[in-house]
Structure formats: C-alpha cells, structure tokens
Length: 161
Ligand code: ROI
Image (cartoon, rainbow, N blue to C red):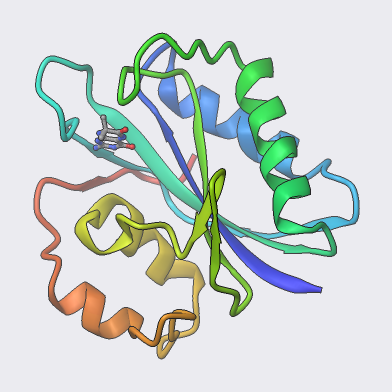
C-alpha cells in the first residue's frame, strides 16, 4: 500500500462539479482507498486568456502500479469529457500524480514528483492540508521549504462544499 497524492484541476463546465465527480470516481478505483480531499481553491490560469481554475488535491492509498494508476486517471479524465486539443489548453478535468509513496519515477509517460510542484501554489497549499507537516519528497526536498518559497498569492480557498 502506498500513499499517493493527486492534483486535480478544472476550468470548464462547472469546475467544482468536475472535481466532485472526479473525487467520486477516485473513490471507486480498484485496490484503492480514498484517504482524503483538500478544500477547493480558485486561481487565475497561469496562461492568460483562459477561465479561472478550481484546484484541489486528493490522497489515495493504493496497491496499483504507477502506470496502472495513470491509465485509470486518464480514463476518468476522458469520461469527464476531456478533449486533448492543445497542450496547456483549458480542460474539464486534469488529474496529475504529484507524489507516489517515496518513489522517483522518470518514464516517458510519467515523472514523479510532478516537475512543477514547486512553482504551483494551487498544488502546494492543498497538498499541505493532507500531507504530514514535515513531508519530504522522494527527491529530498521538504514540503515546508517548498511552501516557504511559494507564497500564497492569488489563491482563493473556497468554503467546503
Ligand atoms: N492555472 C491554474 N490556476 N490551475 C491549473 O490547474 C492550471 N493548469 C494548467 C495551466 C494552463 C498551466 N494553468 C493553470 O495546465
């Protein structure tokens, strides 16, 4: 059993509802328990000209292998109408494996820890709600250090739905 953190994001078709549906689907994954969900946060897109995003993080305990989990997450994205028109384009649902136990994964389809974790307040702050205070990533960086270097700017924490 490994603890896995999933970053969730949506900026189309009722984003909060997209995240609620995604959480429901994560709860039905085989050999997996949903261990927690952060609050939802809104923020402007990192790329101009897109609607605002709603983001959250979910914690899973799973026996799935990393690429099995990736396939399952992509199936959930597709079920929720994800169209891959352009990289970085607006999307109904994005599910990213942020951390997978204490594994370092460097495969063409999957890099863990997720390579942009440190730049993204909308990932780090919801992650900090669920993770142990002193969490250390597999690459040695600590969550407190990452938070200290990534100010809580432009994030709006939504009341729990
Ligand atoms: N911006 C925010 N705020 N949240 C996201 O999830 C997100 N995802 C993206 C880009 C377009 C980079 N910007 C984002 O892919």
